[in-house]
Length: 271
Image (cartoon, rainbow, N blue to C red):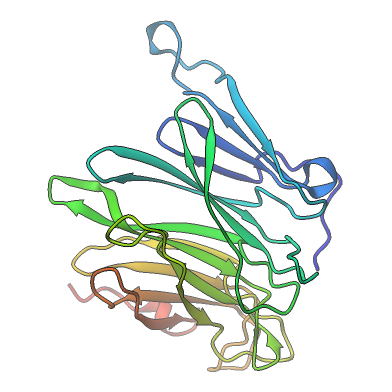
C-alpha cells in the first residue's frame, strides 16, 4: 500500500456536476476522506467570477478509506435532467476485513445535497485491490438533438490497479452501467484484466482512465498501466490500452488495443 501525506489533500480530485463543483479531500480526518460541494463559480453581479460558496460537505465513515480519492460526474437525460456523482474510496475495508475499495454512486442536487443510489464493491477481491482509484464516465448520445447528454446508456469506468490476475497483482478496469433501460439498477459489470502481468512489477493497470468519446462507433475508455512491462522489449516502460465497446445497446463487449511508446502509439491517422 502506498503511503499518503498527513495533509487533507484538498483538491486531489475535482469534477463539475452541471452546477455544483465537487472537490475531493481523500486524506482529511485521518484519511477518512471527504468531498466538498461548491456553488456556481460565475455567480455575482455582472456575471463576474466570484469565490463560490460552500454548499455542503460529506466525510467518509471509515478511517483510512480515502473517500473522495477519485470523482466522476455526469448528467443523464430521461425526459428530465438528473445529476449524478461517482466517488471513489480505494482503501475501503469491507465486512470481510479486506481492503477492496468502493465506489459510491449518488444523485446530486444543484443545492449540493447528495442522495445515495448505490454503493458498489467488487465481488471478487483479495485485499489492497484499490477499487475506485480512478474513475471516468462514458455516455452515448441520448438523441441526435441532445448530442452532449447521455441517457441511461451511461457507463462508469472504474480503475482497480491492485487487482490480481493469476496470482499476480496487476490491475483491472471495470465498465459498469448503473441503470438498465427501464430505469432499474444494474448490478453487473464487464471486467478487463491487465495484459501480460509479470511478477517482476505491479503493472497497475487502471491507475488512470479516461473516456474514449464515440465518433462513428460506441466509444469506450482508455486505461493506463504505468508500471507495465511491454512484450516488445521486456522493459518496464508502461502501457495504455484502448478498451472499445462493441456490445450494442445496453451491453459491453471489449475490444482491446494496446499502445506502447515504441510501436503502435506512433502510427499516424489514415483518413
